[in-house]
Image 1: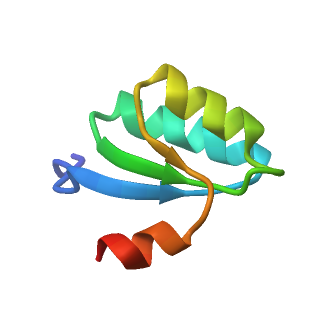
Image 2: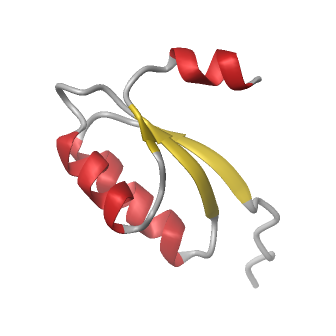
Length: 68
């Protein structure tokens, strides 16, 4: 029997093709994605997936340090 997932909020970071699929899976699991951080040149599909789901997208990981 699978234990209930206790993770509820995450910041998702990715830039490769599989990252968008991983993001979709997390959304389907009910995980609240607070933001997506990716690179402008390599995260196009990930940016599109996040935007369609209403998740803010940041193109510079420096934002995380500013928010913390």
